[in-house]
Length: 216
Image (tube, rainbow, N blue to C red):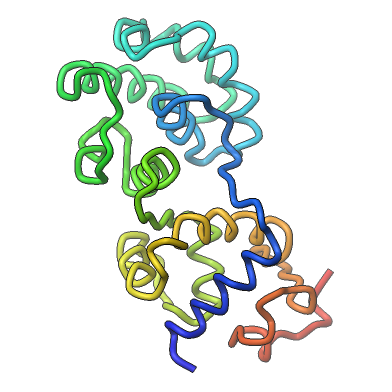
């Protein structure tokens, strides 16, 4: 079986297991997703979703964020961790959006990654979820599960992104990454993966090597 064939099987299996492939971050517009994803770095989505309602109520527009005092933004996001850096980045990226993009969130990875604190993971999420373009969001779940599936044995997120772009149907790649998050939380966990319950066990090379006595 080739990696491309295994990738197609993984897409189909996860689609059947998790029909609703949606981002777990709560947002109503592109700017909110951009900021929420920045806040999610080294923080859970659940925690971010607790913080953003009051943040977005206080700062409603990109201009509001661009004019914001960094210290005030810090107060709203303290529980997200690394809040000083994140607050600085949020205000700066809002200023960059106003100065360089007429206040609008751009629709390309190249443009998005010019913004303060925005890397390829966030950029891919935005272009995929907001603009409907083919995207590969390489987070910790994606790295772990695609490695266990035998697609790579590296940790470099950018290299993994391009490996997966070569294997996945572009029309499926964004939803596939959302499903990896759901699967990584529920089944293919970091420490004690529940391999016997995995919808991909029939073709996952890691499954045959797994000692089921280690499962919880």
